[in-house]
Image (cartoon, rainbow, N blue to C red; front, side):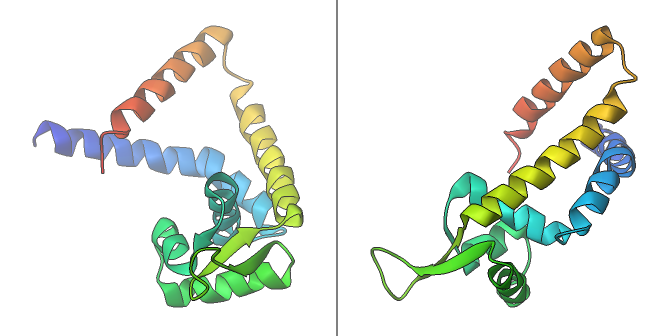
Length: 145
């Protein structure tokens, strides 16, 4: 087994553990009000501003056909709106509303509380070390396309 395969195996194990300990509880909170894909779509729109359906589908890693009903549910909930592009009226963009931002921030705060509560069992030394490791992992993974 080469180094990349070894790291892949360890990474997948870690990813599974992180999902079970951290992501799954966060998803339960978000599911009370939004499906995970809807929550992720709101997070993308908060960070990137307006996006076309194609751009959003690409970021969500789903088809345009799957993205359309997801966006329709968000529109019906008043969390996003469709708007014509300022430079090309043929292009329709999706933009988050104030209610969408508020919902995303509220759910995000709840998810962070769940994460923080799980990490409270760690010592300050372990938290500092974990912080450094996570930052380093992000730096390394920024080189992966």
